[in-house]
Image (cartoon, rainbow, N blue to C red; front, side, top):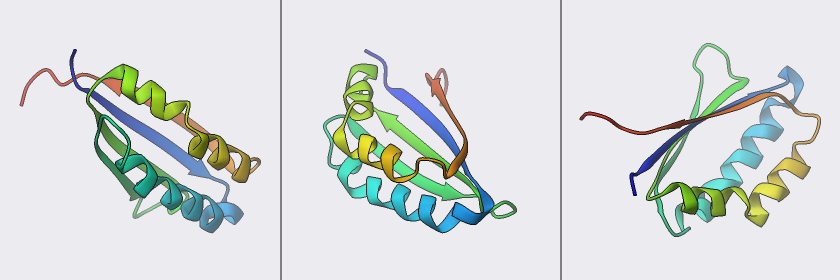
Length: 97
């Protein structure tokens, strides 16, 4: 099965940037220890600090799905309820390097 690349864009409300950032940072160590996680890198937009981006690579879509069903993500969703203005996930497959 092909490796899966995920790009997740999260935009916080302007008054909730620090909260969302702190909650996103809590996900990093837990996720990096998960089976199938190749990398899980968090970025913050230099021009728009409310915009965060996760760049992730997973050994398979099934292992990424297990991550998405994890308690730590449920905790993140609960902690950031009403603080996130937009959230999109893009699933990608590398076709050349």
